[in-house]
Structure formats: structure tokens, C-alpha cells
Length: 316
Image (cartoon, rainbow, N blue to C red; front, side, top):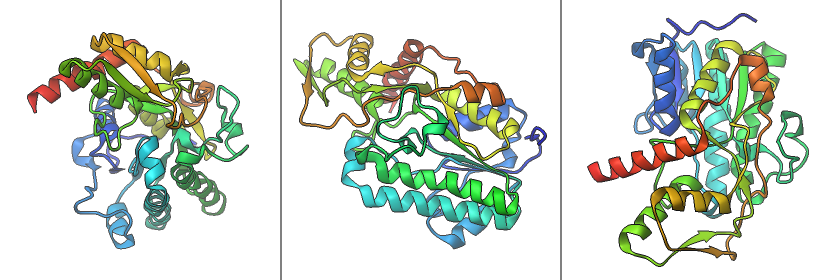
């Protein structure tokens, strides 16, 4: 299938008002997309859990990029498993169905690394996606998103619908969610260390043992990967989007401690869960299929995120 030309296409981005969405819009504009052709359905006007709203969203769209999701860290996932399952599956499945019915040219489903089994050989390869059950605290979220892969493959097989499924690793960068109730590990730690430094606290408590590992992808790189896939990738086999490195939560905490200038000690609360033991993606398929390689070094991206938080927090 030929490369999808994005100029003059009517592009709907669900979740386009969020963290990744803002960077994705910038990347689309770099690729010649006029902002008049980008439609972002705002949640206060369009409830993507309601079919009548979904029908309005997909009408006249050429391309749909589905970013919208209910997300959170380990604590939020653990406390809201039913909402994480229902809201994510009910936003995604009817959206793809109505997109097909409406004659949408291409559907880009953005999944999550939480789709992978708890004990996946590292680095995670797409072929291992079904070899086990996800980590328990985020399984409802991960499985809800994973159903979009099943749907994409089924709709392509029966209807010839061009739906693709991407698996981004944990994202970070300017504009991230710093709400302690729902933030992921990097913004949560940045906020903790900066506040501890400012208040003169003698210790910062971090969840778990610190042994778990994670991979992080700078949000601008993720936006680039999604745009490249939207243009060039046209099969329903899942594709990882990552940076291809692994860092332990212990190393991460000490790095953020150093970069925020906090001088006191870290205390590990081992009564709290670690989450999935290890996470790192094999990113060779994205490079082969649509030429994506992450551009941003982790320390550089981390510093940009810290600087953004300090600046915007001061300005607000």
C-alpha cells in the first residue's frame, strides 16, 4: 500500500488536547498539515463513551488517530480497575467500528506497553504480545487497549479496513501530567524531589524496591513515530515505539535527585508494588517498517522536562 499523504486530509485526534496530543499536532504541522484540517473532539463536548457522540466525531474524517485514554500510575490503576477497563474499551471499540462504517481512510490506534505479559523476555518483541497475562495492577487498562489490536486485525481481514496498532513505551517530557493522583513515575518523582528540596525535607519516599526497570520515550519522539506510521505503515501487525534502553527505578530516582539538586536521602517503601518487573522494547520493526528511531538522549529529555515543570509551575 502506498504512502498516505497527510496534506489536505481531515484528521481527527482523540485525546488531542492532552500531553501527547499537543506534540502530535506540532509534528503534523511540520509535515504540511493545515491546522484547519485537524479536529480535536474535546471531552466537555464529545463523550467518547457515547455512540451518538462518536458518530459526530468520525463524520467526514479521512484519518483518525486515537490517543484518548483513561490513564494513571500504579496507585490509580490499582484503585480504579473497573473504570480503567470500561472507559478505555468503550472509547476505543465503538470508535473504530463507527470509523469503518463512516468510510474513514485510516485508523491509527495508539496502545500501551501495558498490553504486554508481566513476564515478557527483554527486550519485548511484538511476537510475544500474547504469551501471558499482563501485570496485575495495569491488566484492565492494558487488555482494554489490546482489544483494539484484535479489532484492527479483524476489521482488516473482513472489511479491508486500514487500521494500525502502535505500542508506545512510557512517555515523558514537557507538558506531562504532574497531578500526584494520576501521574506516572517521572513527573511524580520530579515533583517529589523539587518539593522536598524547597521544603527542606530530609527524605523522599519512593514506592517499591527500585529494582523494576522501565524504558522511556521522549514525547516529541513519540509524536514523530506516530506521524511516520500514519504516513507509511499499513498492516495490522502491532509495532513497538520506544527508545531502546532500560533503566531501573532506583537509577531513575537517583538521576532525578541529582538533576533537581536534592541532597538528602531516598527511602524505599517496599510495602508498595513495583509493577511489571522489567520493561524494554525491541524497536527494530519500527525502524524497518517506517524509519523511526528515537532522537532524544534520556538525560537531555529529563532536564527539559524538569525545566518545563519549574518554569510553568512558577508562571502559574
